[in-house]
Amino acid sequence: MGSVNFNADLWYWKALEDFIAYKDIHEFVSSKSAMKAHTNSMSYSSLVSDSHTSETEIKLAEFSEDSLKGSLDHFAALTIVGMCASFEVAAKDFFRNLFMVHPEYMHEYIGAEKQKGQIPLLDIVNMGDYKKLIEDLSLKSASIASKGKYGMVLARAHKLCGLEKDEKIVGQINKIQGDRNKIVHEKKVVGRKVSDVAEVHAVIAECLEALIKCAIQKKIDGRYTCFTGENVFVADNLIVASDS
Image (cartoon, rainbow, N blue to C red; front, side, top):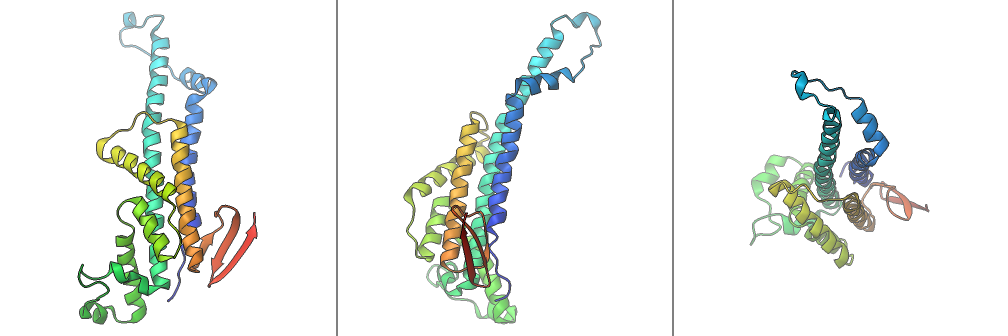
């Protein structure tokens, strides 16, 4: 079937990268000495000298600090959206690889509602060969299988791979998706603490690990060294695992 590779390490790192970037900015804004150095590095001038009182620079420094803290709210919201995007892309990549290895699993994601599993003759003829047909169908099916509530996406993966659904993680990831939707569609960007963002990252990481477990269960080639408890690399259907 050609090169098949679920690069879970990449998506795991992308989510971690988003969280680290937010945490770095949060630590800077929370540091009194860093904020003082920042405001002291700025100079102020006034076109009207009489308007520049002895308290002007203090007030402007306070304004600058408040502005940065306000921007942190926006960055927290964007970080949550970014981490959710990592899960979305990872899920699509997982299903694409799953369908490449096990084409029969695409049955529910091909054809019209009452014609599941049926492929138009012209699609087969125009594709030219079996390998290209499966690759194209895998990508299309993955787009469908990875849509909807995040919890449903995980449930599909578990069902196809014969693993039990984790109700707790399903509820957590659905809650996060709800918050993500409020950020994207309603611009609700305030009121999130660093602990909230850290919790989102922890859940996203656990969901990615759930996809890795599914991939290993079905012997899908990939990079899984981020997997909790084990250093795992899978290639050419050979699984090598070692205790971390």
